[in-house]
Image (tube, rainbow, N blue to C red; front, side, top):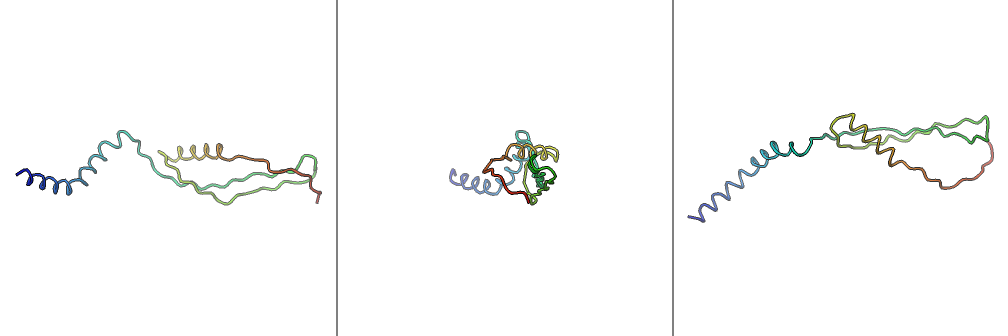
Length: 105
């Protein structure tokens, strides 16, 4: 009799597990974890390459990067833009590689 009940509940568990886990996720997961959406943010970095202040009369060049795509998990679009803004401010770093005088063209 015990073996029969074990097999019966094992088979029921196999068939009812997807329904049970879906019910658990629906009612309990959203309580503990805020539901966020994934946003794809596409942007370009532009900066004005200014000549040296010692070379009067020369004009700088507007430098544009290729479009950059970032995927962000956030609650809404404003939150996603804030995350991207903080990411760009924290991760874009400038490092001086070399400096030398060049002839004026």
